[in-house]
Length: 251
Image 1: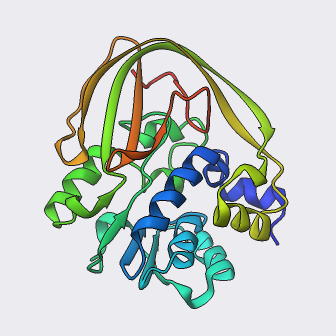
Image 2 (image 1 turned 180 degrees about the horizontal axis):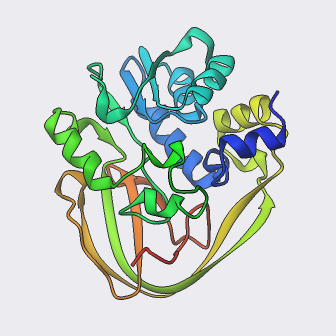
């Protein structure tokens, strides 16, 4: 079992796989949609999404991940229940799948790499694989899986508000069925996670639609985002408590 200091080396930006809103939304959708389907996670990280796909009966599950140490950790957890692809998304030929999952989100919607510079120094390998969400959209269009890419619906807003951060108990038992099981069995040593407390003073929705129609836009205040699976099971960076927040650079 990994120790806390090893986990922090793996997941410097706090543990997104302990976010209850993310796990609940993803597990609810996966439970209804992956049975007997071919599924790929385009950036598998901790392996929790692949774990859920296996539990809910996917016919075949692929875990694409560029970081070798995370592939190694996933193999300890998932064994031979998934097929591992140790590669960069934009530099490999993807298998044909029914569902392409990509949790591309950070507090800064347009440019995850810019957000991650808060945690990593320039030149760190962690920054090399992260870019802009619009790169993913164009790649998915070029390779003909944009209509199979999930989550797929986006709402963008101009938000006047503020976010503060703190460490809180992750409350494993508040998570959905298999997400809770994953955390208890494989990351039971994690007791706390960094979260944002978000306060929205005003919100103006500026765009809604399918991710394939997404275009860059700016706002006057903070960029608030909400994504969902066919307009169900939402995740956002402006819930009262979230792994994501309204941060400098979102605007």
